[in-house]
Length: 301
Ligand code: NAP
Image 1 (cartoon, rainbow, N blue to C red):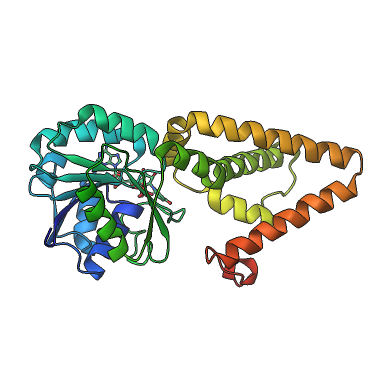
Image 2 (spheres, rainbow, N blue to C red; image 1 turned 60 degrees about the vertical axis):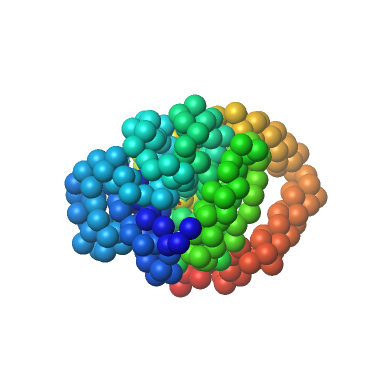
């Protein structure tokens, strides 16, 4: 395929970052954009990460060779139902959703054989949302997981892979269910813990009139950053990945109970063993180039 026409459905953090990255790396002949609100569409045009915006998803995709869904997970099925009958033959749909098995199943029911779907998930993001949050470098040196199955067109996989590599990502392939289990532990459970601990702290502050938030030290502060993530996006992730999350939460609760028992028994050896092991895991993440070893994540305080 020569340089494709690309349509972005959803112009928030990920959609705007895609627009910036496609432009920076000169990967698209034309980038069209659609978001639910006129305000977001206008901002996208003003910032300039799309060449055109449209009032409906259908108008946005009419000339598209490749369409990216960058919306909350719960609206992808409806949007796909609207646009699939209007797409060009052999157009490619892809997405960036944080859970993969559900969207793969939904799209399989809609696709008519003329259109290809390549499910994707860039492991890159921030806790910011909206069209002003994006930047061209978001995906550079970050993983992008694609989860094609045996029915997925190899040519379509190749085209989508080429785009992600062009934006600086390292592309890996995975089975959708496996992706959902891995992400349940690496991303979804940590977010759930953050939402929970920040909620508990806020409640404690109001119940006891103690200054929990005011004196929040770095550990808690890191949780508040994660807990500031978009509520709609995260609602959809937990509902879409229910089975894997419940499985991982079960294991987490068992391990937490073991720590609780060790503290009650004053079993310092057990605590030290666990904490030593987890410190090693942190080092292996740094060694794998997935984080910086700068103190406090590079913050100045
Ligand atoms: P976001 O900043 O909140 O942007 C969401 C976009 O979707 C907005 O432009 C919104 O339009 C649009 N939208 C919502 N409902 C719509 C509808 N019914 N029709 C058309 N457009 C609609 O979200 P995001 O962080 O970019 O996340 C988007 C997707 O990326 C999610 O599926 C998420 O799982 C995935 N993801 C996120 C991250 C991350 O760190 N944020 C990382 C990897 C993958 P309006 O502005 O008009 O409301």
